[in-house]
Image 1: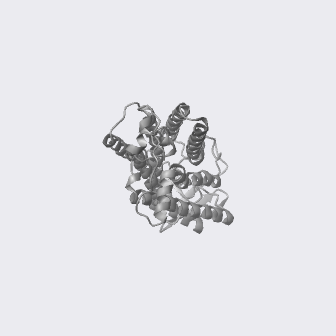
Image 2: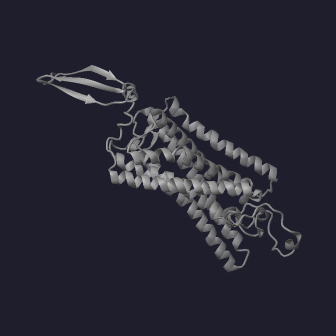
Image 3: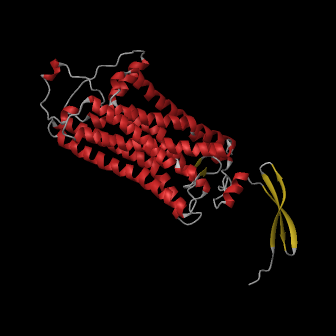
Length: 395
């Protein structure tokens, strides 16, 4: 078999991080200038996809402005919301319980995303290009994946903790509950490191994700090694936490209906509606923020080439970043007890507001964290309840 032309490529000059190549074709000769980062050349020679040129289609000026505005709001609201959460927990020790330990972990990881990740992508969207180079891209991808998975795993462990508090018949001591909560926090970080360190060692890799704005796992890589990592990440860091949340909150909702039958109908309907709203908000927030990102990753890796346009990848990425805004509102700021403490803090009061303790309701769902003993004068007026319900307090 013969070809009607002959292609010969030779190196003409090397200056800095740019190459100039000469291309000779039979029947003519022409100069082709290629501006290519050296790291990209290394990736190409090692079988990897190109780095910053992987997203060839740049966002329009209007698109960059829109992305910059959205990221600006996410940065301000996410940082301020999680900062308020951590500040209130530090000001009012009464709120620091085993459940709040996981909530603090979620807020801390979300705040780290706002500190180490969102400002870089915001600056890139304003300037229209990535500003911190390949090493900055590597750090951005690793740190955001680390903090994001910590938040996801903590959300699922939070649902498991609430499920165990509500449905386990034995009453555990406070010390054992705190040990279990601290263990859950440690597990979330170790589990996240287990899944975010391998790309640094060659199991997949970190690189540009959308047109020169963010960096993440290289979803578009189609090698067997890269696909095995992406599949594991999708199943064990997104799908399994979601299934655990659905199971735990589903059982909690059923338990809420059973408990509320023991009290007056109007109060039961009110509490059940509140529980349902909280559960739906938690699951919907999880799905809205993370599922589009997971679907995009699977389509990029297993779908036909080009099925996900480079410019369209920014939408799931932005939705994932909104979790830093939604999590404080859904899990903390909508809690009555926390809201009262927040208002007391605004009024410059250092003492926590009084909390009403009602042992026949489901505060572990709606967010009651106080373990303050009930005054003896109130005990005589309470409705008799089972030992399982005595673990639950109203926010």
